Structure formats: C-alpha cells, structure tokens
Length: 216
Ligand SMILES: C[S@@+](CC[C@H](N)C(=O)[O-])C[C@H]1O[C@@H](n2cnc3c(N)ncnc32)[C@H](O)[C@@H]1O
Image 1 (cartoon, helix red, strand yellow):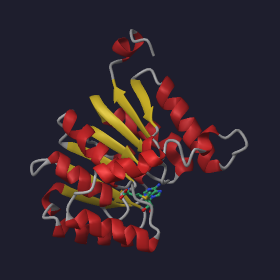
Image 2 (image 1 turned 135 degrees about the vertical axis):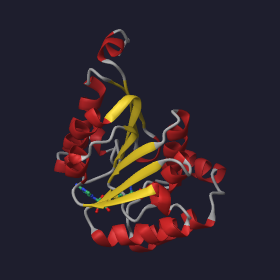
Image 3 (image 1 turned 180 degrees about the vertical axis):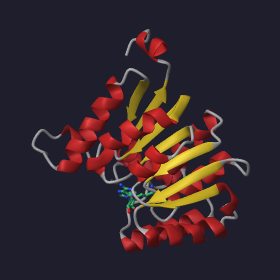
C-alpha cells in the first residue's frame, strides 16, 4: 500500500534503529508478514500509554513485534513470544538476544490460543496476529486474560480492505469480520478500528457496568 498518505507517514517515521531495519529487510526478502514500522510504533506507544509491563503476543513470527513491545515494557517487564513454528522461535531468540532483551522475553512454541488459555497470568496487552480464521477464538481466549484497563491490539483488522468487499467470502476475511463484530459488541470492551496500514483494532477492557454506561 503506497497511497500518498502512506508515503507521507513513511517519510515521517524514518529513524528506528539498525536492528528493526535489519528485520524489516529480512521480512521483505523472505516475504514474511510483519506488522511493519508504522504499526510497531503504535503498539509500543499504546503499551507505554497504559504503563504495560506484561504483554502476551499471539503470533510473534521471528520477533519483530516482540522487539517493539520489549522497548515498551522496559527491563523489568515481560513479553511472551508465541509461535507455532519452532524455526521462528529460534530466529526470534537470536534477534532478541542481539537487542539485549533476553531477560524480558519468554518464548513459547505451540498454538497461541491453547498457550494463552492454559496460562495463569493476567496481561496488560495482548496482541493478536495469528492465522486470520482463528481470530474469533483468539478473542475469546484473550478477554479473561486481560486486566481491566488492558488492551487487545489486533493486526490486519481491515485485511487489505477485503472486510468491506461484499463479494469477498474467504475464510480468513470472514474470521476478521467476525472478530471485529465481536470486539465492537463485547460487553467488556470499548473498541475502535484504526484503518491505517491494514487496520489495527484497539480494544480497551472495562468493567461491564462502566461499558454499559458508554454511548457505544
Ligand atoms: C503475521 S505473522 C506474525 C508477525 C509478528 N507479529 C510480527 O509482526 O513480527 C503470523 C505468525 O503467527 C504464527 N501463527 C499462525 N497461527 C498461529 C497459532 N494458532 N498459534 C501460534 N502461532 C501461529 C505463524 O507461524 C506466523 O509466524
């Protein structure tokens, strides 16, 4: 996506360090989908805005989004990296080690929905970036593991604008549509969808009685 506004944003966001730039280059070469710099910046800032110290990522790939969150939580925080592919986990370990953040990242390999469901932690931020047809399951797993005032941040919420195309009926698109509807209607979530850069759905967890009083 290289619309004039995308190019303008890219121009504003030039400097972000050599390691992230190296990972972006690797993603380009291997055609591996990462959140990208504009989304990484948003994830890091959102996490810092709520003073996040515990982040759980569902679908971490080779650690690009993990590194942004690592910056957000600082040396005393913890980011949980999850991926179904052990090769991605190994590569992420190397990058996170080079960033000097091994102490603040926990690596789990397996199905992120099962790993979060079995986890007994409570998180400030949960990132959803797994296979798109599984987004509704991911939301169901995420809500009880999020503290009140915590955020679910979900990538690809507009999915190349396919969510708005009535002729588009792919399982992945339907998964994201169901996710977005569920996040907007959930009685404990206040959600908005930022359409920049393939869409980021941002949901704030609230007590249901507070949510019920809002004009949502
Ligand atoms: C879009 S990539 C993640 C990119 C990463 N968030 C980033 O921006 O650096 C999606 C990753 O999720 C993994 N994945 C897909 N479904 C999964 C699942 N159910 N559980 C764990 N990992 C999954 C894939 O192996 C892939 O590495």
